[in-house]
Length: 180
Picture 1: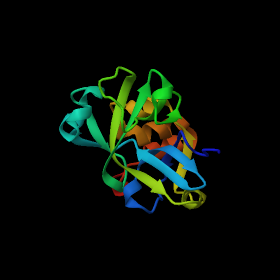
Picture 2: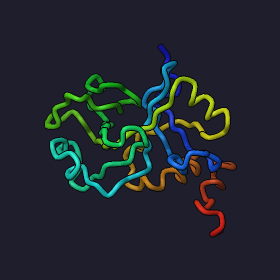
Picture 3: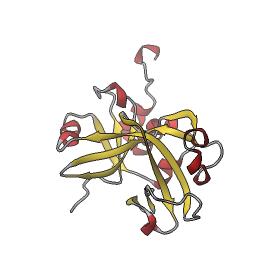
Picture 4: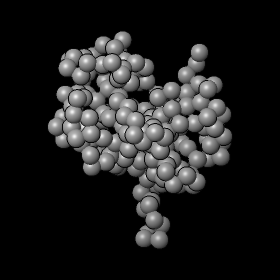
């Protein structure tokens, strides 16, 4: 079965109605006729992975933080990683990047880099298609480094700049136009 927008980025347009997604960049992890699941890439928190889930800390650098992955199940932790062997992923999303299995041994050296997300973004069947049709999302190709940027908070502007043209000028627009 086709996984439609899986592995693509959704970049929130300035007109998006849901404040949970204002200036969000979402990686679509899975998308099919049953709906879509993604993680917001550009919302780092102040909580370190070491503090949140010490049993998984060996996958991460000491100062790696948990990212706010979206408004659905904010107490659930999803981990995305770049695998040395893609067959180890629970679900491949982009190249060698995929979801870490729930039974993954964090001491196994099969992960190059990883990022933890508290919660996720979810869409019911056809909901994402409707939001795209109404202009809420700009769809573009994801790059592996988009997931692991140290400047993740700036990813919305970075991706729009990368798209060029009118998107580049949109990237320079302040979050609050009244301060322009």
